[in-house]
Length: 384
Image (cartoon, rainbow, N blue to C red; front, side, top):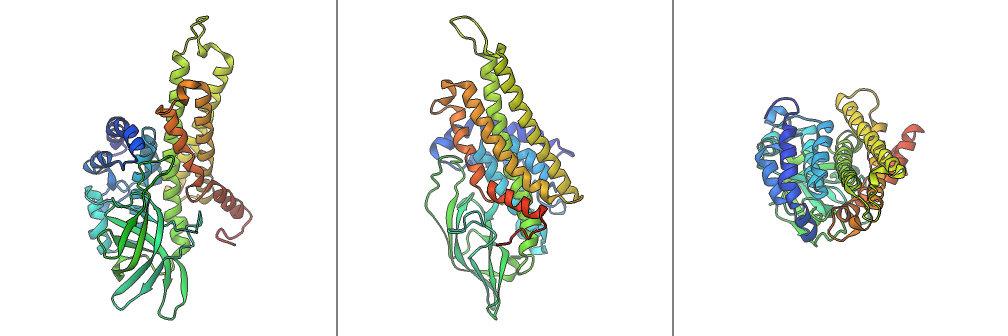
């Protein structure tokens, strides 16, 4: 892989090739983006956030946002599936043991292993950081019991980063621990079918775990590493992956509107839409919001990657801001394109359905605003 960000040429080639060509079928058939992942694996882009010493690219949240933006411009499902693999990779790498490097990170870097997050649970809503899945200590390691919902890449990943409550021998619970579980582990089952109105290729399935036995080496970090994992790894990478995805989606909506306005001429009088001041104003306003969101996303990512100052507030605001921006851009684009954009099967119809997920995917926009307020008011983020 070439040095610097020259790998983005490969990302753009894949995005504008197989990802663009498959986007409509993925949406209409609710199909996981297998062909795109074949190319992403072959190019070893799945090692984007794997450490260099494991053969990976060693990139941070900034580059993750850029890649998800490029993929999201063509297919939101492909982008978020790739993003969740990268977030799980970062979680495994954060406190990696030699076995984690050999068993997971090196295969990820080689493009032969796909991982993903398994955090959300029924009844928890956006509060993914309060899992009810139980990780119980045994004589040989741990036993995992619980059920996860909305597991992106469900049934397609080779391993799953699972959160749970850890129970010691004295039955004292601690609130958040992470383990990695192989897909082939006995006791894992996937159920249901992802039938969302948008993001139709996610394969976000229900994952049940019944007495899944794992060795103690599959624990990530230490028992009860709750706050550290949530705010130093899971949330930053998760937010930037989603922010990049929805930024790409918003850019595609803007491009669709811009192309329509440029070529649209009214037959009855020969006037062009692009000549109307109100249209010029709307296009300028949309671009301004889009560019502002992009700059804030990349600035927050760079600040986090450099570990300079307090990067938490910009990170929390980033996903919330881009969610609001993306919804607005898609709505504006539909208004500008009129009936042509409103047709079933049109690109904007798919974007309209996909973009609504950005507010409800945890951490939700409301929760991020609350966290931001709590941080500014010196309140505990995970308070009641």
